[in-house]
Image (cartoon, rainbow, N blue to C red; front, side, top):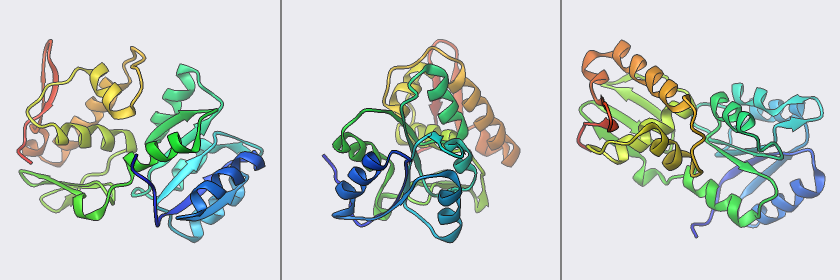
Length: 224
C-alpha cells in the first residue's frame, strides 16, 4: 500500500476520539491539523494551504459541504461520513469532493484512498494537443488558457486522459473514478455534458478531444 508522507492534512471532524485517532495515525509522518467545527475549519483554510482535507459532513455548526467552497482548487477533499445513502454520496461528489468514505473504516483504508488523490509532482502532467492537466495542482489549461472545472469534472477528465482511445460507459467511469459500485444515476452524464460544454466554449478544437459513441460511451482521443 502506498503511504501518505510529508503532507499538510486538515482533518475536520467533531468526534474527538476519531479525530485524534486519525491525527495520531497520520501525524507520525505528516503535518496534521484538527478542526472540530465549520467556523474553525474555514478560518484554518483561509489562513493556510493544505495538501488534502479529510471532511465530516455533519458538524455542530453546519454542513461540512459548505467548506468545499473555501477549499482552493488544487486541494482534494475526501468526505468521511456516517451518511452512506445514495443521495448523501451524490451530494458530496456534486459539491466537489474527490472521494467519499462511509464510516466506520480503518485508517489504513483512508490512507489508501488519500494516496490515490495525492500524486508526486514528477508524474503530475498529462498533455495532449495543447491540453495540459496537472494532477498535483489539479489545474487544466488549453494552449495556456485556464479551463475551470469542478472537482468531479477534473477527476473524470483525468481518468479519460489516462486511458486515451478507450471508450467507457458512464457507469464504468463512475466505478473507475470513485472506486465504488455505480448507482445507476445520470450524474456522470451530467458531469460529462458540462465538461464537454466548457471545453467547447474554450475552443472547438479542445472540445473534440472527448468523443461520444452510442453503445460504447466516452473516449479521450488525444495522445498523451
